[in-house]
Image (tube, rainbow, N blue to C red; front, side, top):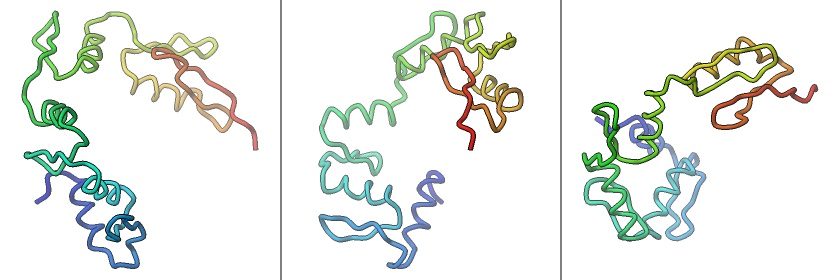
Length: 154
């Protein structure tokens, strides 16, 4: 049993033959099937502060404290003033606070379209069938608006 899919797939990749392990450590010559596995291994040579709760290693004591606080602690010091929601960081709280707003967070800026929504997922799905063709693509113009831009015709 593996903690998550990434750990399972890492295990599978480690079972590959030497020929399939193209990425080599410059410190100890150990070989890996993927660049990410090599990067994870390189932490052993560079970072010296290992988390006692998982395989993570950190470059400094303060980064290890932050890792433990955000990955292994149940402490949620940021609380919503409007409901019982609490979270570990300010970014998540700001995203949550948007759910209490009645204003739509995203608006379509395409000509003659007044579609708006609270969900990033919904605005992306709105663009795909409505405006995306071989000639148009969508980009984020600001945090709250999308716009269509002509693609280079081949």
